[in-house]
Image (cartoon, rainbow, N blue to C red):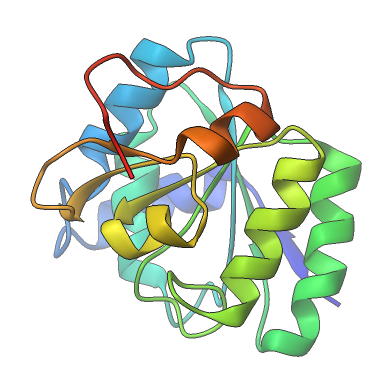
Length: 167
């Protein structure tokens, strides 16, 4: 069963490492600017294996609530979706390097589809994540360019930032 971790744990972890500091700054900045009411973030990942990325995300998401659903393998993703459905976050963030639900994985595709159907958009830091169905993406994997998937954004009920390149 997936475990839920709170922002308090993430803040403590954020102080421990800054190896990927800044990877999520642009993404969180766009979410705060273009989707200002969406302050409850969630991420599905192997929390121990993705600790550095979680630290960077927690650092960038200051002032927002971050729900971490800890999964150890693809078999946990269905349970994670149920957990997300119960907590109804306003945005799900994909962690690019996560071995379970990172961009490009079948688990990420499943998560993106299920969340969009519940009007919960996903966001990523890679072009691959946006091509897979994340509503928007900006970060190291996009070369700093803001990308959007307009079709998925419409399904999830969010606007496409005006300065985004639609793919």
